[in-house]
Length: 421
Image (cartoon, rainbow, N blue to C red; front, side, top):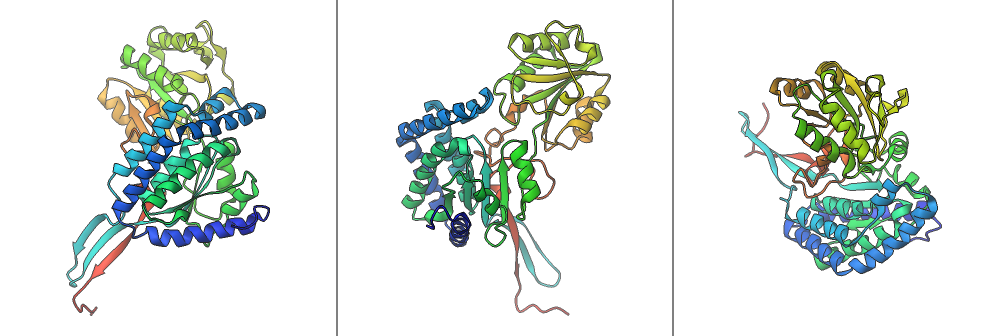
């Protein structure tokens, strides 16, 4: 490894090593990838005390840096969360191997037989902030899909990510797969990020996972293609036909379960007929739970609300705050979401099938939900084992990006001495 002071040379070597590893992974047997992931899961659990001890150093660093309570929650690991990492690794291991899957096949009158089959992307760079579990999720999904990965964790999670990465490498060794299949950039220096974004000869795609500042930087400066979402401006619309209990349960969970994740609700839209009934009950429950409700004029008669400003519409709080406004119908709700949303996740609470169908048809968010908490916007909850992120663009991958979404395809064309007329 090059001197860490020479970061361009360090990153060039990491890139070259990843590209070499990706060539081997592209045809690695499914059984060996499975073995590597199970081995990594065992190593994480065996070394849980070491991982939690490393995490304590990161928590101290985060406190000294003045991270918010939500960011500190994202950063924290305890035995329960380490168990979640282990479960995630095992879940990805048990997923079907996507590489080589035949997506479609057909015969042509010319005599050709054509197949379209899944193939790895190659080398994936993942840049993330304070959630150390992303180290395991991203490493596992890239390995499962036959891709080498370069992980660049946030400065806040440096020690935790390093400890988890060591377990992933242990799994690779056990399965006799190249150790360079999963590499972690061994420096907090931001120059490493700048280098990674321009490594067009060795990196095939960049996945940023973090806040608006990080994702915006990557989208502006990357020369490598990017899968990303800029923000999770998540809306919940309470329709005139909403069930009161479902509305209360879904909104409370969508906002308060974990406020610092991208699937947390950030704006509540309430049908005008519900102001004095369901709407008021839900807002009071939020306020009683400690949520600051930034309300429009129609809702300010409810005790405990605060006045919303123009800045509250389209804001990602990632904290115990929510914007709330009244709309006259589903079309006004749709118009608001189109104007202020981020195409991440949006939800309608209604018992009316036609209204739900209109909501689904006329919005183009990556994830649309009905009568379900937006906190289900997660690859694990979608049956993908884990996710590398939520993609809100329209090219290649959308929504939770699991192993299958980290593949492209190639055409296999067979003939029998077939020539073109």
